[in-house]
Length: 259
Image (cartoon, rainbow, N blue to C red; front, side, top):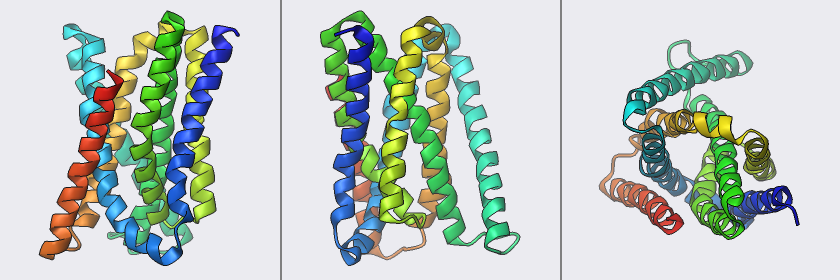
C-alpha cells in the first residue's frame, strides 16, 4: 500500500472515530443531555484552554525557534483580533435574522456564535493534525501509525467538548453530529496537502498553530467563561472549577501520551 493511501486511511479513521466516540453522548435521553450540557461546557472550557496553552502554543514556539517567537506572538494577537471580528459579524447576522438588543446580544446569539467559531477553529486545527500525521508517515510508517493513535486519543475529549458547544448553541443532535464528523474529516485535506506541499506547509506550521490556539483561547475566554459566571452558587462554582481542571488535565495527559 502506498504512503499516500496509508496517510488518507489513518487520518480519515482518526477523525471519524474520534467524532463517533464523542457522539455517543447524543444517544442519551433529552432530559439527561440537558442536565449534562452545562457541565460539558465547563469541561469544554478546560479542554480548549489545555489544547491552546499546553499543545498548540508550545509546539508553535518550539517549531519557530528563538528567532520566531516574536512572530508567534503577532500571529496569536492577529488570530484573536480576527476571531473577535468574525464573532461580531456572526452576531450581526443573527441579530438581523432574530432581532436582539443593539448593545447587548442575548445569550442564545452568543451561543450560536460560539458554535460557528468552534467549527471553523476545530476544522483548522484538524487540518493541522492531518499535516502532522502526514509528516510522521513520510518519516516512517510506524511513526505515522503511532502519531495517528496519539491524535485520536487527544481528539476525543476535545470532540466531546465541541459537541457540548454545538448543542449549547441550539443545534439539533443530528446536525451537531453530522457537522462534527464533517469537520473532523478536514484532517484528510490537511494530510493530502502536506503530502504534496510538505515543505511549504511545515514552514508555515508554527504560525498556523498560533492562529488555531487563538481561536480556542478566544472561544474559551470571551464566550464560555462569561456564561459560567452567570451561576455563582458555591456548589455550581466548585463543579465548574473541577470540570475546567478535568478538561485541562485530560488534554495534558493525552498530549504526554503523544510524546
